[in-house]
Image 1 (tube, rainbow, N blue to C red):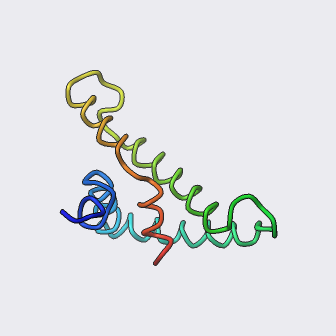
Image 2: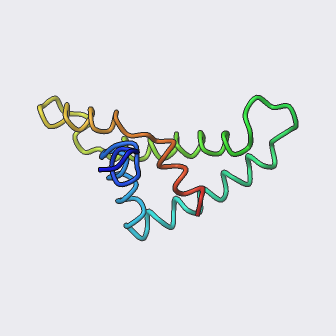
Length: 106
């Protein structure tokens, strides 16, 4: 473990999500392409004096999409059990902005 938390990420949960999304070829291709699209859209929409930079807007939008996709794919989301509670807690610990940033840096 290092100063950042876990393998350079905020925590284990963030690292695990990033690892899986970056190591599954289809997921990697999808999120890399979405990152580029979102980044271009944010840059096109940016105007001098906006509250957030284009980079911050892109990171927020991509983070929201990744979070929705991952949480939507949770097979335990609709059940009440020890395992669904633990999964929900783990996903709640993910730093989605950090995961998004890993794709925007590509």
